[in-house]
Image (cartoon, rainbow, N blue to C red):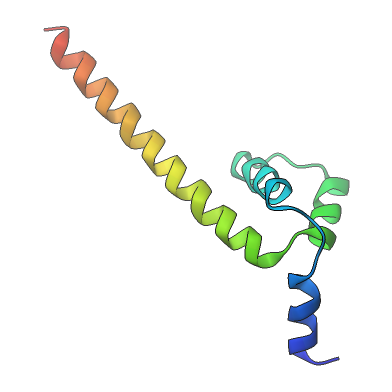
Length: 79
């Protein structure tokens, strides 16, 4: 088998983007059962995983920025 064939098979995996987002969200918490991990490895599309990871990272950074803004804003208003 060629490397190109492996990539084509990986991209054609059946998992939906929503399933991929769910798996990436669990990975952000670091909590995943071994059986679920094996299932994800077999079914998830690697392109979807990369896109979901970037989206998850951006949302995480935005949440942190909003939290910092809220804490700074509530501290100034409390004075």
